[in-house]
Amino acid sequence: MAWCLPSDHLASNRLALKPPASCCGIAAIAAARRRASDAANTHSNAAAATYLPSLSRRSRDPLPPLGAKATGLLPLREGLWCLRQDFTLTENIYLNTHIVRLRSGGLMLINPPAATEEAVALLRSLTGGDPDGSRGEGSVAGGCGPCVEHVVCINLSPEHWYNAPDWAPYCSSNATLWTVPGLLQGRSTASLLGGPERVRLMKEVYGRVLELPDAGPLPGLESEVEVATFHESGGWFSESTLWLRDHRAVVFGDMGFAAYDYRPSNALSVQMAKMVGIYQRLGCPVIYVMLQKDPRAARAWLDRVLRWEVDKVLCSHLDALVVEGAAEIRRCFGFLLR
Image (cartoon, rainbow, N blue to C red; front, side, top):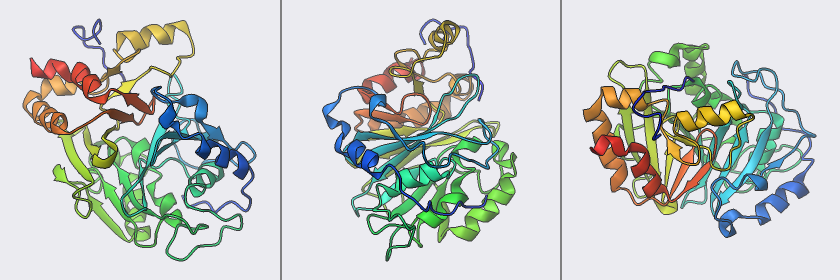
């Protein structure tokens, strides 16, 4: 992922793993769940993350860091969690996989990470996972609690979709996989890293594989989830922004990032974060030039997002949660309104 640095913006702005045989750290998970973050008014509430270092972090995916990735469970708000997994470019910017409780009691998994033993056990802690990994009736593998009913890949960049097939064993048998438009056709970066083979596996292991709408309610969840998709005119970038009505939250993939609680590793990285407009604010360094190049499509996308009632932004990299969402979105994308 490359950060664009437009001059006028600088100043302002696998096979699936088997379920783990042991659930070491269940007490730690339970403690984390009791620390539900509604009481905290921080952005990502990073201090609440729980890791299970006794479980394997081995990963087979081709995304950095190669070989092993740590994953933490981060409670965000009531009915909202994040699996925060290492994703290292020049910095560890994390891949934030958001988990959403739906009205049905089931769960939605957005941008699935590498299915390491640690990551799977943390998800199973929310779905009533059993230590022996047996499948509960109508539930996720190894659980008798709420199922993962929907898995959503909202961006064409590989970290958002590559690992989706590996999570099917931990979902309801009739779970739906939703993909950003262009992924199933292998457009742009969806053709990289064996993308066509991964898409073939997605179709094999999920009960249903459907494309997210360009705009409007999500079929089957019309009163809970809406979508607004931005397509760059050259076909290189597509992202479906989600609105979670009950949680008053917008989900960004690569459209926006923020570094409030996130701490860059050195002074140079702090200066870079300030330059690209993400330090102590929501910014859009990856997509900025594309939005300027396609102003009509960008404005149509933004107009739809601004109609939603939003008080938080869920970001797929860096901070997992940004509060005061409506104001942050207007400040981030205000250049499109001029």
